[in-house]
Image (cartoon, rainbow, N blue to C red; front, side, top):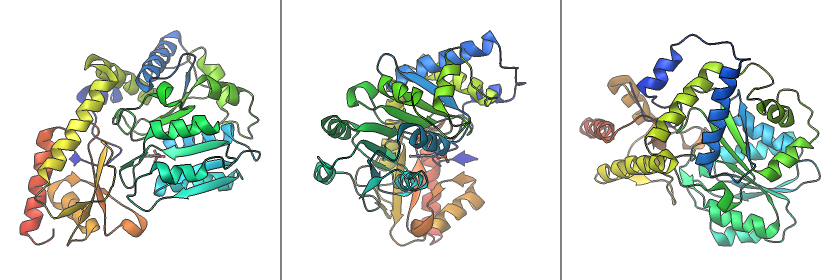
Length: 357
Ligand SMILES: *Cc1c(COP(=O)(O)O)cnc(C)c1O
């Protein structure tokens, strides 16, 4: 199997080997040590300011998006949501569920966020901003720095969903002034799904410690209190946290976050070069490094996905909803090489010969 989706992605041999081991009991100093090491490397890679903390959540990243909305905002807030696709829309739904007043900055599929559009909300009385830095459904990358400056000017609590952009696109939490950064185990971290991390800058730590949350499992104050001793309130996905430890150390040995970002960028660039002659149109105005979204000019996008899966053992990432037949995506994250890109491009050429592409 060759997996070009945007998660779960291909894992390294070493990470897979850890997944095959017995799961140890976790209320031990040994496991706490792994958690502290995970926290230290996560903070380093997020370029988080001093005093930041990490909440390791046993849930997919949508659970962390939900926890952040519940713990950081109330009915007294008014948040601005950048909604350029299905992940932006998820924040809208969450704010509806938790009755957080919100404004929606709507972008069409593939459209980038310009300063002009953002500053339509300058001085609009908002208190927070929610954005998916890579809107993975369309592969559009937003400018975390430009948004950060806007947040600073308007004193907004700034939440970055970096689930698919963490370690794929440059991100400096301290420099852009983000209060929260969310990511997950199955994207660039290339581990099995099941764990999501919330990095909290000092202002966010303060906010969640005093929040009143109607939830036991999603109480971030409880999570942070337990993390002081390298533990979680409830049984975490112990095996995946050990795989994350292996993966973070792998990244460290290969040169750290910046080296991994460069590697993903090169993987994307190589693919984009190789498909230049093929009948695809790019579907994103501001392509993120982690994923290329493509519009096949004369073909059905979903059929390309099924053909590749059923006849070549290759998985690309289909789109859902309205975009199902017009757009599909190719991921550049996880354990993939330039040679794998060639294999995929050869399969595209084969589909062209068969008249499917
Ligand atoms: C993958 C992803 C998520 C989370 O999806 P889960 O299925 O809950 O893991 C959230 N936001 C973005 C931008 C993503 O790419």
